Amino acid sequence: IRSVARAASMTSRYLSELRRKVSGDRVRFMQDGFDLDLAYITPQIMAMSVPAVGREAWLRNPAKDVARFLNERHGNRYLLLNATPVMKYDPSHFFNRCAQFAIVKDSVPNLEALMELC
Image 1 (tube, rainbow, N blue to C red):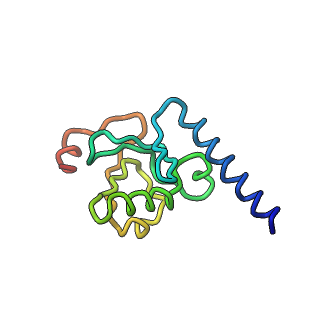
Image 2: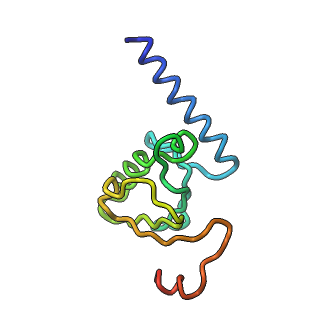
């Protein structure tokens, strides 16, 4: 059992280090047991990569960690705005406080789409 616990701990540390390397020079939120690729733009707005599930979570912010972060630090006062064309995570982890605003990678939304968002 100790070997399994030690292996799990090593795997967790390895994945954290791997995520830091993938983040490059981007700011990471590393407080209170969180290690997420996100940055506060203002006290009420943050930017981060899309919450990941499955193997993608090895390199990106795991959806369960993002949900825990938002629910612990922001309670019932957040909206997760997904700007990618695909939503792979389960919105119920975020109490369905998710909105889809798909922007194709490396492009910009048109003015009509931006007005719809507002």
